[in-house]
Image (tube, rainbow, N blue to C red; front, top):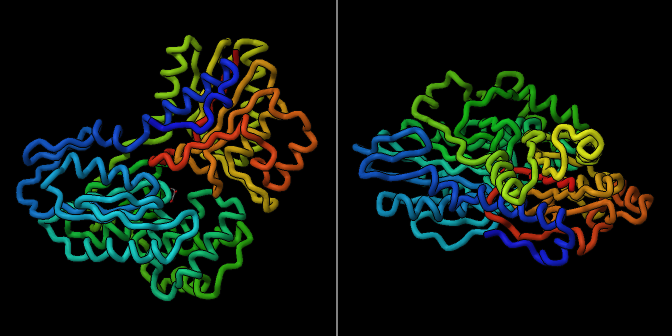
Length: 440
Ligand SMILES: O=C(O)C(=O)CO
């Protein structure tokens, strides 16, 4: 079970206690041990994944490869489920544990590192000689884009780092960011499926992407890609990013038709590929909702795909809390309103912030008296901070001017204190943000 540091201090009211219990249940439900055991089963020569069954007769090698923030836990669970049938594997994760058959390799997030490049090369080596008798299980989890860098021809790690950094700072949304990354690295944008062909590929995804677009989750290593070099150039322009010369040259060469595009939906490399989304933001929301209902609250899911600038989406949540209190809409109190998705922040200063902290602090300035809001990134790392998020109520902000100044210098954690900051450490999963709004 995920543990929240200092929970006794944070849970000083009934609303706060409920919000934190919901957060804990949401994260736990999305952790790989639970999710994989529920959805993957080996029965003799039959591998069951969700509603699909794969016949392993004739398969003489099963290789599990991939990466992302939940990959270590998925690898653990697969080693248990597949036992001796598993031949080998490698995953690149931020906090690798000791594996049995699947090697655990260190990578870095949100900006890629040399360790990630080395780990990705190991995956390349394991998959490069796959044939018709090989089953490749692809472990695709959020964070995979940075953890599995694989720079394309002519692109250095430094080019990838600079470009990623600049787009993150500009607040680029994930689809746009990944359209660029897919055109700068070899395993993204269907590249892993291409490398594994003609093997059968079964992909197990944990989605941290609103709408579960498989070509965006970890930049879609096993998914057809419809984005283009031209689009990648347009993204850089849209976010005002002037990339390193090698990046611009590659994207311009691709847009001019001098480089092959990433494989699209009709490409035969996907003939033997099946992608399964095993967990997403709704997995966390549903578990949180159950806890709230058990505690006697009326519950409502606002949306699992709230996105946009955190401080603006926060005001919508304040408005919902006000409406619950004033007119009993969309439900009447005591109520728990849940949302998921991915808020972003445009970095304005060099303070310590993150989308969830900014969401919570912006809401706290205006929350009505009977409302509590908890906002966390289910991976336990809000933006590039070491915190998961924050729990706030109408007492959190004593000095609205100072709170606004903190927001303006991207320093929400600088304003919030030990009575608000939620710290879980890395949770081992990643299904995006979870917000719990309690109105008593
Ligand atoms: O691309 C990534 O790595 C993401 O976190 C989205 O899945």
